[in-house]
Amino acid sequence: MLTPHPALLRRLVDDYEEALAEEAADPASGAGTRAQDLAYTLCVSTATRDVEAALETARRILAESATAVEPAPYVPAPAAADPARATIRPPAPVSAPAGPAPAAYPRRAVPTAAEPARP
Image (cartoon, rainbow, N blue to C red; front, side, top):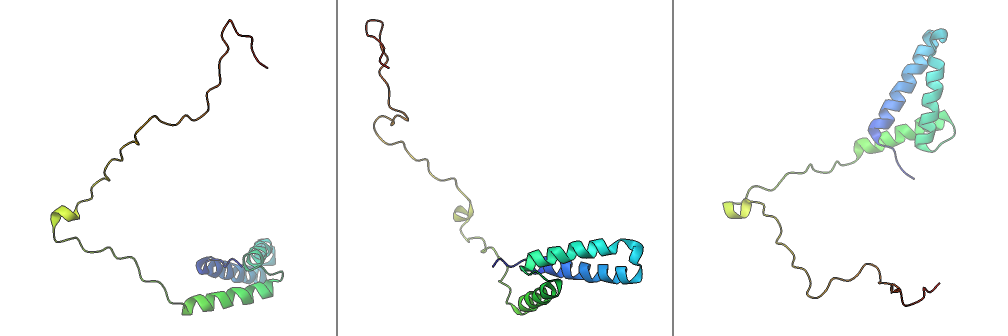
C-alpha cells in the first residue's frame, strides 16, 4: 500500500478536528461540509472506508514516522586540495564510428520513366 507523507496526514487530521470543533460551535457555519470533505480525503489517503478507522490509521502512521530514523542530510565532499582536480571539466568528445552512418529507413527503388510503376 502507498503510504501518504506524514506532513500531509498531520495536516488532514488537524484540519478535520478543527472542522469538527467549528461545526460543534456553530452548526450553520458550513464546517460540516468541510469536515465531510476532509473525512473523505482521510479515508482515501489511508485506504479505509470509515473516518474513525482513517483517523486510527493516520495516527498510527504518524506515530511510526515519529520514531523512524531520518536519513542523514546530504553533505557535499570537501574541495580537493589540488585545484586542477577541483574543477569540473566537460566529458571528452566521443568520436564517430568509422564507416557510413546506418540509414534510418531502407531505400526503395524509384521507378524511372522507362520502368512501369509496381503496385
